Length: 464
Image (cartoon, rainbow, N blue to C red; front, side):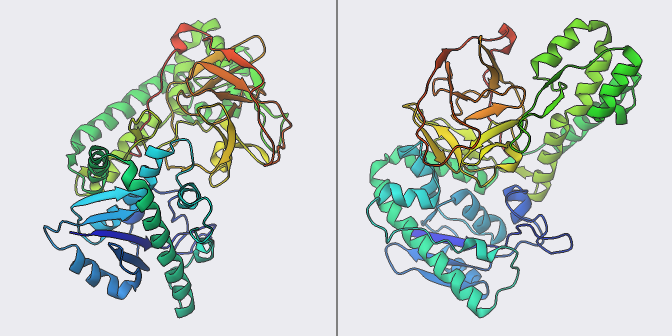
């Protein structure tokens, strides 16, 4: 019974042009299921460390044999990886093997330093702040868009992967004594639910739902008297409302990093200007209902994704839960509760959420201290209830319990939710804020809902 630390290296596309085998093939655009179970998926190789023995790289040709020798049926080994949800899924879904239990240094890090980045690079600094020899390499980007490796490239990848396993194991030695055994069991159970799916999906029920949903959508569109193409286009819909109803859709501020003076028509279901507009023109509710139905595809896309994931996994759905998401120790889905119509604060200024992946953004700690951190981004962006906030000088919306500084595109105010989700903090500063800036909360405002119906706590949702 051993601790087996490992790390797999796999291909990924980054800006690969159409026609390239790795075009749109990366975890930035695909879920783990879509990525690992794609015909293009392969493993270049992997580094393995058994207990505190030497770390060794195995190329693709020899790796499968070695893994089968280690993870024999009924083995008692513990597999450890920095992102065990990913590497464990490869071991199970790609190689058809299983460990007795799974540990993840990424999630263990969150149990100890919940407000810090859980990246391997950051974890090394947390565990060994004064030891510069225990640091993550920077070679990963050089492997982008590679599907075949020459000997020199593989040698570089082997060094990089070996180092990742060595520093991960070094961090494990710091983390493991700090976490109770029952918590380690909960971590294992959480990972097992994803790595070895057991939840069977009733596909026919989902197909029936899609039929009913599409039939209902068609009926709503027909009742509106407006074509689907007009309802789906903000520009066309605004013009249609003006020409046929004599009404002007409200225009609101929608600043972007490139155009801080940008404005747009308020058409979102959570935009207060549009909610008020619909209420004031209640006789056209059938039209507003049709616009919102066509604009929001989340119900359909979720059902379709559940079907797709289940088909990829033999009719079973992997449970994408993250252990120790917040300082309270609760579980959470693998998707961030940040809507795409928000901007996040980066060192270069406010950036729309879809463009912010991989960039450091401003996050707020329990002590209300602000810092730059590169978060883990996931495939499906949250769409759901938001809490509305209004004040004499500030208004906005946010998803509770997420300490990410966001700027709703409907307002120019820079807003972040406090940890208790009961206060707001305005951050003063120019649009371009240097990484050396010191942030001090300048105005802590009491939470006041704009309307009772807006007092909704959001739920994190899984990738499926």
